[in-house]
Image (cartoon, rainbow, N blue to C red; front, top):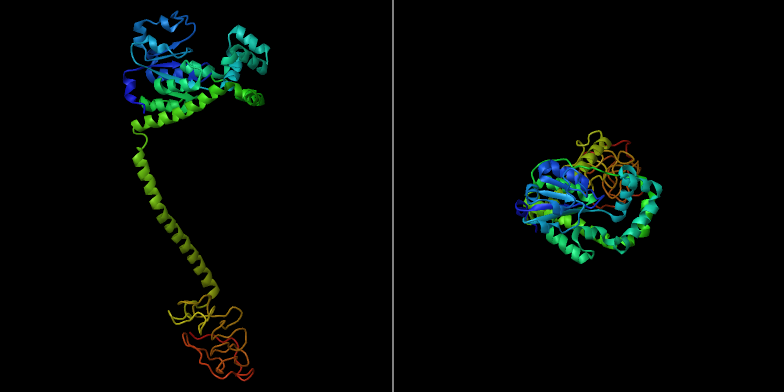
Length: 394
């Protein structure tokens, strides 16, 4: 894990790869540390006449905190103080395309003239020819001094304070603000709108030439993961991220709460459904939903109590009210069913005769909980006719 206390005694070298977001960082560093603490080395600096990092005096090296420029890894040897590196890497094909559009818009006269004389594809092929066999590891070597992945990876892990991809640049600026405790907005400078202009041409170049940049693409993926891990380590030291043990405890607590929350949610859904059902029953059971219902425990499920009449299915209340589904009587109970005779019970079905019953008197209904006694089967038509619209007596 990187120890943040190293920043107290170290200086930082930012070896800025061209067209990889470095200009944005230069202005951000000025706001973060002050202009007098940031030295920006250019190939030709007219004001100071410094043309090489070697030309810096000891006093100048002591004065500045960050040294930025288009120079390769290795300048830490010029300093007596400990040095930490900072770097950004970009998709290698996108970087060449961005360079083309930059020259078209802001290049020096000769470079600008050349860019206007060739197409993007021609410019790209020219860059491939100039780089030769080194094209696939240009950024890797710029950042580490090595063109092989394993050696380069070791340098990043050992000497770099931070290294990120251009897509992580905003996150990196926020992290720097947190480290140095100064709230700043992320900056974007010298941005070339190459992606919008290149469109399908850029994608075609990637499809055709990606294999030539194998090392840089591999390094870009490594740097992405390196930054993510370094960011977590730093935020942990700053107290901005819970410690792993606390994370695990919070996760376990969250898992433990889930069943209870699910049970509460289930109970709420059940209550809502019951409330909705009760509302529907009251409408269907009017009039007198409660008035004709049997008392608790008095009605049997398939006995003398009404199924959809005045007594409950297996409990205290009538399901839909005093009337039967299609008539005033209840189904399978003492109430009459659409004018027919009583079925397996003492109550008449409002028909002319009792069916398989003891010949219950017309209109008489068994009280809730009373079962009909077996008796001689009445023939059809022997019972007295039931009066129409008889109500079940509760």
